[in-house]
Each structure stands twice: as structure tokens, then as C-alpha cells.
Length: 278
Image (cartoon, rainbow, N blue to C red; front, side):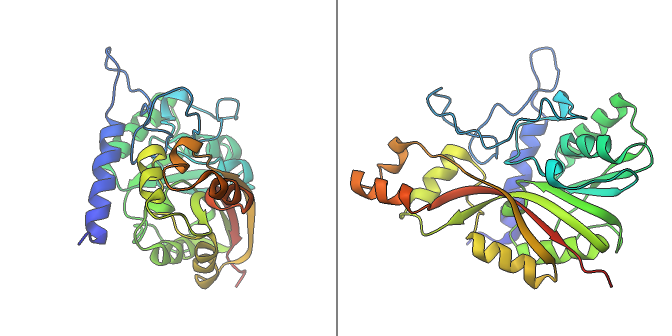
């Protein structure tokens, strides 16, 4: 039986390998996309163009060396970050969302990235050092038990990470704890809508990555509400368009048409929620 710690070890190993990938000259490169990462199809056939991650390259603060293509949204776009804010990025990877957040919070703000993969922390710190940023830091730790103080952040962001966390109840309770009263989060993640055909979720994981830990959207939002958050809002939703060739392994043509019309499947959502002012 796979335990929570087993799952974390698998994620840590996979993302550690991604973090350490380099080109022939030893320069760090993006992950190249593969199974069990959140960066799109393992199948490199150009006809399969379902990349989950949104386009960052035109966003202020974007750092190409820190973009491993592991996201499924652009939470900083919706995070309402103000100059001087303290921002925490959960599952910060090589630091891309942190650097985008820094462009919003400015020199007077502070950005803290948290990640449980040592190689990612190392790579993010190297990126921050190369950029000369003094107000961006990266901390090793588990989202279910964050080594961060209470009431720390004005804003929390996270990009395609919570679905990989085994205990989402603990993760959102910890998010609540580190937010200041009145603070808020904007989190992009993968959820399910409706029941999937038997076996499809497994194959979707092999095809697109970042799906195996996804839960129903209603259950996801319930966990957020049960943690104490208010003003819960889906800021963006987009379907992860699995190819018909994959779906037809599980559905007849008529069932496929019904499946698509029913708005069932795997979706990327960006969720906003606020900690009450106490």
C-alpha cells in the first residue's frame, strides 16, 4: 500500500531529476515534459498539444531560466499583489512565480518560496543570486507542515502543486495559518468534474502528468471552506483537452460526444479565497 510518505518521496525524486536537468553545456534547461510532471504530454507527437501551463513569457518579472513548464495556470495574474506585500509561493520550484510576484510587490515587499525538493531549492537560490534579488528567499519544507510563522503572508500563491499533496486538508489549514488576517490566496490546480471512465485518469496521468492526485472540484472547494476561508471564487477554469484517441480507448463515439457535452473531465482552475479579518 502506498503511503503519504511514499507519494512524497516519488514526487521529490521526480522533481529533483527535473531540477537537475542541464543541456550539453551544463546550463539548466526546462523539464522537456514527461509523465508525472505538470508540464504537458509525455507523448511528444506534435498533434498532442495540451500543455497545461499558461504562457508566462510576456509577464512582468518572468525569468526564462526559472520556468520549468511545470504549472497549470498563472496564479500571480489573479493574486492582487500590492507593492510592499509579503508573498509566499507554495511549491516554488525553480522560482518563476516568486520572481513574477517580486515584480508586483517591488523592492519594499518580500517573497518566500517553499519547496520540499532540495534540488529545486538549490536551483531557485542560484537563480535569485544571479538576478541579485535581496528580498526573495527559498525555504525547504513540507506544505503539510510549513516551517513558516503564523500570520506571515499577505498573499499566498501556488501553481499546480496542491493536487500532488497527499493531505490537502492539512495543506489548506497550514495555508490559512501562515496568512495574515484579511490575507488571501490565489492557487492554480488540477481538479476533476464528473466521474471519469474507469482507467482514464491513470492514462491521463501518463499522458499529461499532474493528474493522479486530482480530486473532484466540489470536494476541493469544500476543503478550502472547511479550513476557514471565505469569499471563495474560481477566477479561471480551463479544460485539459485530452485527445480523442485517448478518450476512445474508454468511450464509444456516441459516449464521447455525450462526455464532451456534459462538461466532464480534467480541468485547471485558479481559485481565490480570503482569511477572515479577526
